[in-house]
Image 1 (cartoon, one colour):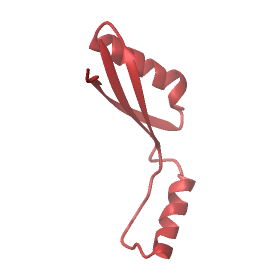
Image 2: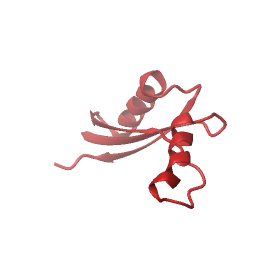
Image 3: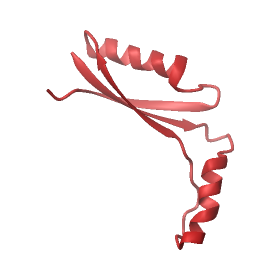
Length: 85
């Protein structure tokens, strides 16, 4: 079976996000007001082939924990769905 995993990785809320702070501070310079906070993370899309949805979920979770996210500083969430033919 083929699956697509959409993964979002964000810095933990307790940690400073210097990129987000820089964007938040400069939005007013481009005429955008009212934004209270900005957090910047990353989005990753994986195309996976696995025997089952459970196997695909385990593969994505392992990839996130071992390589894609720094679990000390970042959290991750993912959605998994079957790939369109």
